[in-house]
Length: 435
Image 1 (cartoon, rainbow, N blue to C red):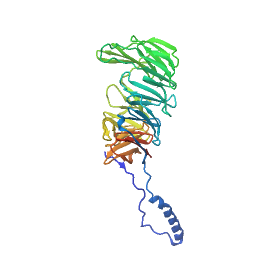
Image 2: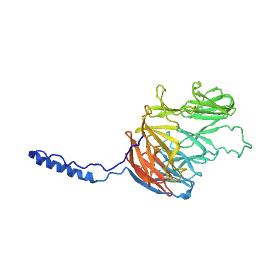
Image 3: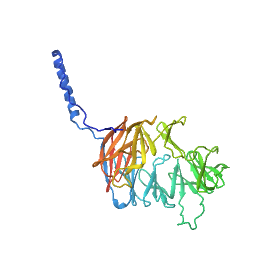
Image 4: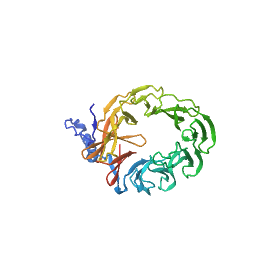
């Protein structure tokens, strides 16, 4: 299908020269009115169009700091390397604060919804046991409120802090299973409320405000998250095989076991303890007014009616779907679009098709475009490499509207709240985007 791109050009058209004059009796009034209209229009006709992409700030960065992580969190753009973390305002690119790094690199940051003004910084080796440092930070100043060696998960006004556990190298002297332990702290102050001890499994469900401790025999104890008060006890059955793990989340208790090299799971409603049926790996998530479903049979994504759960249509193989207020676009993650010279960083999902979200009908092919998503999923920006530049566009009314272009060959780009930030060798450049 032919792609249609709307290029932004100069407005206006040449006036017609073949129009008859009005009757002589009305000539003077018509001529005066016409002159007034022409004079009023002249400044507008000669003025250049306001650009839709303008540079807000260019910030010098030091490549000597080593590998750099850039991420958008709330109203801030965080830039971290092995030496320091800086926070820049998304609105204008001004730096709000700078602080020394607490670990070898920033790998994650979070602004929890339950406590305004708090920022969680996760530094170090995200996948290494005992090598993550979590720092709870004042988002306005960058000052440390408290820190914990290990992972910290925010749940409302509380935090679940898992102390770091050093694991020995190799398999020698490795314990069969270490009991999980977590301290429940006040998120803003770090004050310890109580300690959750697993038997050996433990976890908390943010949706119910409960903490669980579960044994390998399926015996469990449920505690109130704020104070550690015992709420109830009971027993559930693990699948056949050797118990592997137990988790609680989204109102469910999931227990798993390994049986002859096969991982098996059972999911329970953690209130009624009824077993929840359906494929073990089914995942459903909102797709605009509908639901998208990924099942455990590796079939293409299904788009469901939200009330009946009936399948309206399926996407193509390996396609994902994102629906915003301006349209529904399919994405391909297996063949990313390259934006710049550093292909370890500067690649984004590839846009496939603009579709009708109700029936999956293709409205327009989006060949050649990549996609940058806003952090909250509310907007997407189309991007593609053109000679000497990186072109930006937006889906509007079933069309592709080109907004402008920015400097070519970035090492990575991030998009949020009509701001585009791209990193180059020695600069971080932030642009404002108007639509």
